[in-house]
Amino acid sequence: MNILKLENLTVGINEKIVVKNINLEIEKGELHVIFGPNGSGKTTLLASIMGLPHIKVCNGKIIFEGKDITNLPSYERARLGISLAFQNVPSFKTVKLEEIVNKICKKFNSKRKELISTLKIESLLQRKLFYEFSGGERKRVEFFLSLLQNPKILLLDEIDSGVDRDTISIFAKIINDLIDKKVTIIIVTHYGNILEELKKITKVHLMVNGSIVLSSDISLVEKIMKVGYEKFLEKYGR
Amino acid sequence: MEDKILEALSKPSKYGMDLDISKYVIEEAEISEYANEEESRISEEVSKKLGIEKEKLDYIQINQKAIYKKYQEKGLIVIPLKKAIEENEIAKKFSWKIINPTYDKYTALTYLKGNNIGYFIYVPPNTKVDFPIYTCLILRKGAQLVHNLVFLDENSEAHIVSGCTIPHQTEGIHIGISEFYISKNAKASFTMLHSWSKNIHVRPRTVAYVEENGEFVNYYISYTEVSSLQTYPKVILNDNAKAHMYSLIIGKNSAKYDVGCKVILKGKNSSAEIISRAIALEESEIITRAKIIGKNCSKGHIECFGLIESEKAKVSTYPILISKNQEAMLTHEAAIGKISREEIEYLMARGFSEEEAKTIIIRGFSNIEVKELPELVKKQIEYIRNKFLKFTL
Image (cartoon, rainbow over all chains, first blue to last red; front, side, top):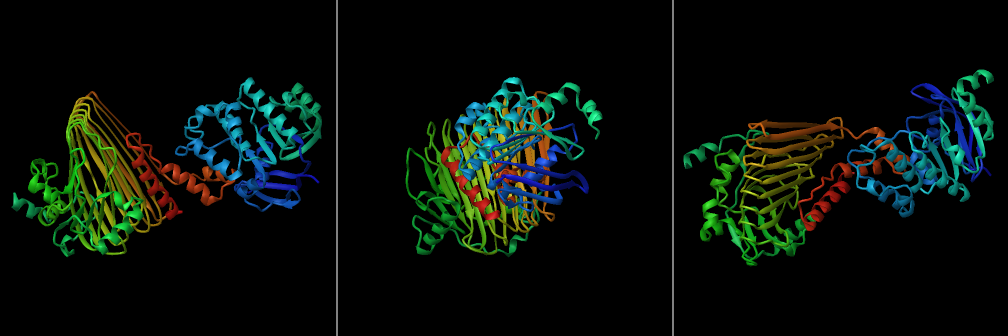
């Protein structure tokens, strides 16, 4: 049985349709990559799987482990094992990172020690969450927090953008380990920086104007990277 | 002088709503080393409320009755001020010298009718009092007029925790006059934990005079509804003296708070910070004021943050900086807003319900980092803060 199934999923933000008619089936332990130009609806697709409140499902269903979760609030989905690393995070001017870490670890009964050292989080624990963090610190902490939820399915939104090469390698190693442990992962990426270090990519989906227009293996990424989105899309038509 | 004080009985406070002080019954002053059964029960009840062990209370005042322990440790004195004025030269000399009874009608009333019921604390030179000094001021009904005098001799250190509360719903007014004299190189902290109810008016009046190299830490927390509460402590700092003024106010129902403080940077290299957090819930109104006057080469910072958590609530903040010296570095930061939707939604995606998310954010907001207080006092504040968070959310 698949772990996640999207059936004819159409979602909108503020009356505007952003994701159209998506059909996707993902098996446990698979790694899917969603690829596409800016504004194609990738982030919204992940947000709708997470159930963020500003997203409205207009049509279709989201099935997680056989259960229809289309109308479930985000925190219940999180407790079921869905976790999202946000592309953009809010700055918490008054809450320390450590407080959030304590709370998440308690809720998800998770361990932090190893991740703190691998992702170099130690020096940030006493800081206010995301407040005056550098781009790289933000990405590291966001990835770290999403992992603390012990997810069954991990949704990673552009975790590789604005991050140096060494950090990308650290992220990739963690992702590879998770896949070995049968955690399911969906990665959204614009530039594909991280992809060459990922070992077992199951499928790559190209998203354009809110729809998945092509699904293929990793060779699709290489083709697109070679010519760029514009030319590729001209060739295949929008 | 007496005439002027009588005249001051009709002098309203500069801030806060004006009150008719003539309608409250003031009980006769009484001093005792023992609490009767009922008083014992009341103090037990309120000490639980404030998280202070009853046995640790060094001074209890119920309306105008002062109950104190007779002890002397390392020369430390904690006795009713009325008694102290009779037998202690310092008490006699400094009582009503730091606060002028003609300041407003509340100080005048306390001077004329309060009979100096309140505590006198004396810390001898070169003495560090290891444990916080706990006091509890309980208003049963009518008026409670409290006059405290705290004197720290040179190079000493003491931490005072005052819990002010009521055992049950009642109508009344609590006026607390607190005079602090902090001698050279001495350090005092004054933590006030307040828990009131809807028919109570509260008017604390605090002034601290800090000599060279002295330090004064004031932490004020009030987390309940209250008819009205207005306070505006004043601190005068001499050379190299420091003041840290913190307040955490949580307004419930139709509570009206007007809370602030003024620091005068009189001495060279004196420094002050005034930090306040206001959370207005329901129909409450909170005003926070802060004023720093730089008269010398000195440093001052004001930080006023407010959270407004209901459409009917109101938060105002008035930070004022006045510099009379080119070398005074004065800054302020103020912000009022509601809890950001983005932050709540982010936490919800991390597995927290909306209520849990709000609690996390408010908990963070209400956490003022205070380095200057000893662990025991911090724990006390934490207890009250946790209680408030449970109580509110």
